Length: 109
Length: 113
Image 1: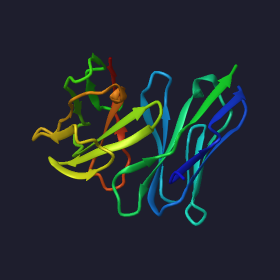
Image 2: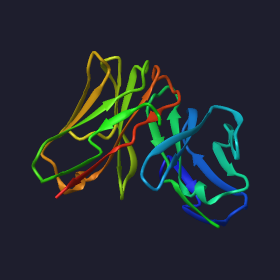
Image 3: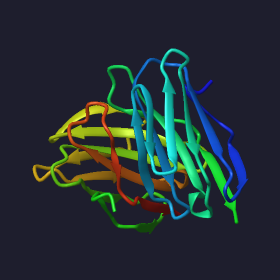
């Protein structure tokens, strides 16, 4: 079993819909990264979380350390949100990232 | 634009050859990380350098090596290339490396024929 699991693997939404991507991990972590990979391949760091909740524009990320779970929410989704979203964790006392398999999001106009 | 640069953007080579990928971190960042993204394995951590010293190794093959130079740029050397080495290679940088936000370069797409 992978140490970092994401669900769903693929998601299709209509423009304007609320999207949720889930990430569960099985190891102790010091922080969790949400990354966005565009169709061209470039990777952008969206959030880094060690507790609670962060918001940036239409994106919200939450983490529950006790439950070893994080969610990424996209409100009022737009076709430009179409990308692969990747969850990655820093294991406790570590400085290397372990990645989930990614969630491919397609937002249709 | 993350401020991290990678060259070349694309590389096509043959099996058995050797290539060098280059990464320049954001100004002020001391840590450089290398990652491999292949279709079947997803993103995998290869190696981390901090201020010229190796800090952590991941699933890096013995045929691969890296170094970070005094000006903080880094090179990833891939030798005796195999078809399975075809992948996107990303570098990322961060200020110190202690579990903080990493900024990714645009990647080098390697195709081994």
